[in-house]
Image (cartoon, rainbow, N blue to C red; front, top):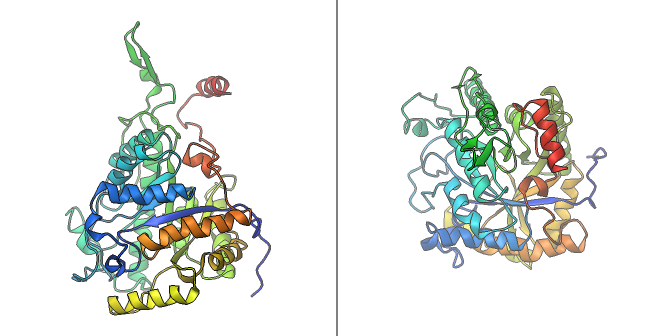
Length: 416
């Protein structure tokens, strides 16, 4: 299949992130000697993972989260006891780790179904302060009835297959709600102007009340008055990201995200997905905005490709079934993975989010094997070039939608 020309050639610099989940993305990863399952619910475990990612100069890490126990079934609990179950809160993990890091972005998952945008807006703004401008969020929905039952405010119809008409209606409604959720969060981040805090001891004025704004959001899903209780974050807007597999979530990415994660299996699929997202982005009136599209891959990395394949096969045997994923599963060497990333990049992807199959093994293989290979090819940084996550991703600091033009001009002049 021929691939149409792309602005991203195989020699263009690329962005790189890793997705942290438990002991790794393979369900039997916790049984590996390097997995450290006894440390899984300690701060030191997560601090060590993020420190390794930062040593590899990665743009950011994402941290998985959910509103129910992990399950091998997409819609129900599975009752299994031979796989990792239970999580720490992703936003709190990120906040705990932030002071221990200096450059890497921290992107916890926030499940927006059943939760309130006001709560997440101030938690993420706080993370941006604690990390001095390195916060992001991965927005996620849930269509599981058992998770709805934790809150008791509404029911979610049971879904047996995503391709059924009823499922499409439910999922579309949940993604529309997620888009409103992000809109509320973004408006709350803007509800304080950048110079709203005066802190003048002599005059006794701590804030300029005229620079705090009601957002007065009224929609079909939320009614939020505002303002936030937390001043505008250092980045203005922390980075919003989302995983998408089809048109409805592509639309969420196009309307509200700064980074979208997609799951193409070849460069042709990547090109088609990116083209669809760009069309939706233009329809949303965001054609001029920078929107990154990252490819997701699950990776098993070893110096010998046969060892990588054998390791997956051994883990599959421990799990009792072959491991499958929404994303492409790669087994091979760091050099072979670098080849694949550059090939996929020609489909229009600006970066990749890698899911290490076994964190204790495959994360160091990324930072100590893949990264040096990409650096040798001149397509990955050799030092951090910015102090904020938006800076690393080449995203401008957005203007405050509620600031008057005079305030905006004065602020721009003062910071020029």
